[in-house]
Image (tube, rainbow, N blue to C red; front, side):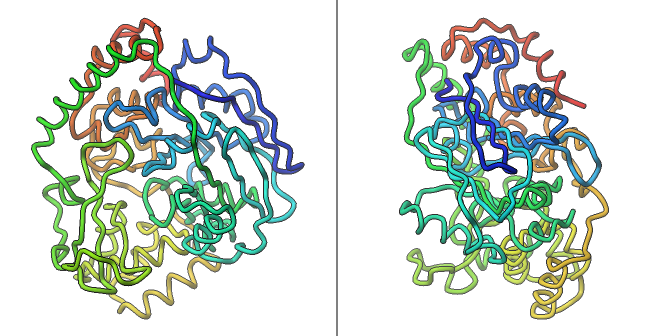
Length: 420
């Protein structure tokens, strides 16, 4: 279920070294946040940022799009876990780097390019000072591949503000613990990846049967739910329907819980005529915060776009633009990202589970052991909170894919071990 090695990058020298992913480590910790914590402890004197794949990330197990970043949060000083979803986690794992340890500070702005089991630290002066959307476009054009997935920082991260967030591709989403500042401190503009590898399973036929079983149970519980409004059914999303274009799922997920909205061209037209017709509303908590004060869904989405471009955490910024018109709000956000705007702490998201351990990415709750095991196995915590997690089925899937025998109680103990 893992291909490649553990990558250790010393940004101060630009050197990248690889070492074998030890079977004993996978046997005891499985993956994701659990392995990340072991690697963090090993390198803690270097204040590392650790990125890790879950055991099931990138596989056909439903909902397994999750990759996990483990680092010291500049907002509370604690070691926190932040989710990376969309297609980035799967691409990183299939690029041959299931776990990446970053430490040090690059002398000049740089970005990390991971592909085909090759790691390159490349100059990023051309995109330093550019917004995240332009950074993604630049890297994809430079490397000649439109499907490259990018984690990047905007102006807020470059200025090392605690209100900065790291952005997956173009969209504000999972980082609410200050990862944008940590990458800025490292002088690291982006991490880009494209994976062409394959995963091997111990028992393919049994694995397929168990995945079908999990998919059937998930579809039954989802009941056709889709869109950002299905994440928190009771939330007031105002006139979102007027700009709603389509609902989108992450890699391998049966629940399209994110909604793409079009406000630069008609939302009712399927074809996109403009290069930038709108925004993916994936960060529901940020979107709701920007809607406060009676702002329309379209204007809230425009400000969510501005926050994504600037790499500015939208919940922290929302209070500073409440009651201000759109154009002035955009100007204020730009000023905030330029310096001096520090977040007061990790934003409070009602319903988020274990906010002292995990970035409050999943506002739809979930039992703490369910969410924690999701961060180990690579299952999206939003998905797990929605459909639940059958620990016995997870144990069967682990045995079918790896040959490792793990009981449900052992999985619960492992999940609890990462909750701080």
